[in-house]
Image 1 (tube, rainbow, N blue to C red):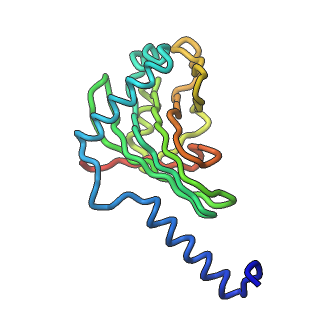
Image 2: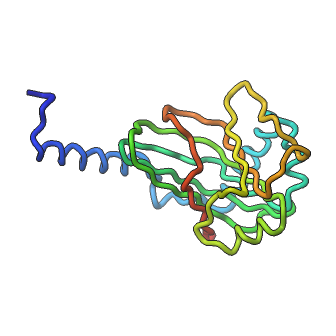
Image 3: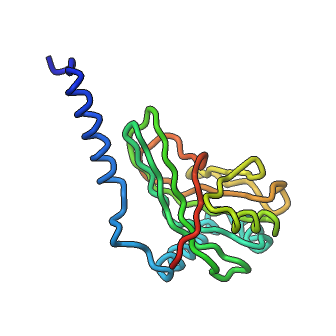
Amino acid sequence: MWLILPFKGIKNCIFLSIITFLLLSCQNVGQRNSGSVINRDAELVLQNLFEIDPDTVSIYKNAPATLIIPRITKAGLMLGGAYGEGVLRINEAPVDYYSLASASYGLQVGAQQYSNIIFFMTEEALQKFRVTDGWELGADAEVVFRDKGYSIGVSSKTISKPVYAVVFDQKGLLAGTSLVGAKYSRLIR
């Protein structure tokens, strides 16, 4: 019967699912984003955030540094992963390029793209980020997920943590956008 697969059939189905996921969710290795493409996309995403919530302009101006990842692609079929590349700006000038990568497992099916901007509100938080390869958001971070039609609801006066992350502009069909377990690493461009 169709619904009852022998053990070998289940292993083949899982293996095929993993291969399909890897082929569909990964960017072509030969199409790495250049610094100028990342900078252009980062500026567009930042302006989009300012239009969505004008209060974030004051956060941006008060933050010593900002990491802007214009597009993160997340996909999953039992096993999942996410990847994106962005730029670290210090005093509004591009300084370094970083990647975000994460892996997950569990009940998940679908794909999604979203944007992520991290505001480093203190020099200490920025320094810790820059010297730690594989840096992760921790308890010292506040993360806000913005859905369509709602203001983010924060300003530079309401932020109490040294790191503030905004996830917005979600597109696609994958429940549960999360930055938990995501590792940020410096890229050489």
